[in-house]
Length: 84
Length: 426
Image 1 (tube, rainbow over the protein chains, first blue to last red):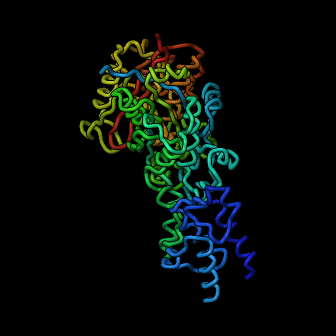
Image 2: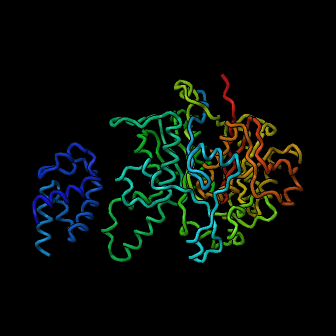
Image 3: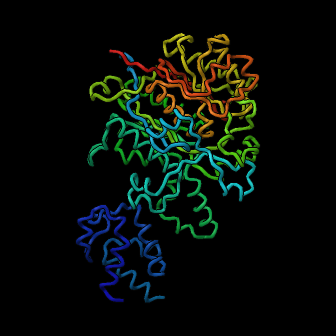
């Protein structure tokens, strides 16, 4: 999958949950979901569900716990896609 | 410390016959009925296929909820309560607290009978299919009883008590009295009080099964709800929400807020399911005590009550309720107050009924009218025998009055009576 596409897909998923719209404009690998994008921590499970639907993968609890930044998320998505 | 006076400075309502305050005022003044036939109920083999359900469009929802809040939101009680609650807050001229500090003097008591039934059904289906993890983050927040008060508390930024009461059909009126007590005793300056109820077959089905809903008006929905009528055959189920901002009089005056009415006092009690009372029927002594106590602590005499907005659901108990009023007030056949019931126009909105009807009561006081009882041109003979028929207006009377008593009674033999007064002197 193209890096650019993955970024765009992920940004699309995160957009409704991100309360900091300025940080969303600067969406990049180092964006932290809670600290930068100001996603409510309870909504992280919703982002995971949306990611699962979008990529047709399953993100287990351990993987989810390591998903703090956009880069983390991309790493997990790529890994799960490979395992398919 | 002297007890504080409590006034009403804002109101909001989502009812089967109107989804905002000005429309609701027109609807009740003109006798507009919001009861309709529901094909869904027919398809599900309900005996009663008519119901009162507010028409809340997606366009309206988008004015009150962000796109994120609307994601996966499937709780009609939260829809109704949020609209009524925020409308009441804005109507009172109050704003949402800024980001860092809540308003420590403002609280919320918003009751419900059951919340998020449709969301709960979604969750049950997922869990039974072994897909619990697919519930996401919103299931708990939409199905906990305090889901709405919690949601409103965050939206408005209230730092005083934020809670939810539940006492069946008494809920809304009880919430008013709980908020009143809190302000009167100096524990809060403003309380947003109200109640909501979900709609739909999963809420109404249990009542249908009890055979206490009318089944003979499925082709004529607007005639189905007939409080005090000789041809009443049961209550029509409804849904919605009502909300009132109660405020310490001095605070309201300081802000220059408009004042709808004063809460003079009230009472809540239970008949204890003794003396003829049961889970579903009222102990008449309990009802009469509640009325007398409400009048007593309002500091008025029984004769000062101009209008009663009754509980009056359109069952065989309507006549009994009127006997209870007459006994408690000690009034005669001709000097009985005017009495009306909103339920002819909305059906019985269950736990939302008390708050929606309190809003209707205060609108009558403020705007100087007594709405007519629709579907009551055949007043029940048992009622005609105890009070003069002209005390049950069929057509709206355009006339000012001073004091209204509003009652709600509920399953569990619980009672609430609140007394509203129009004028606020000084």
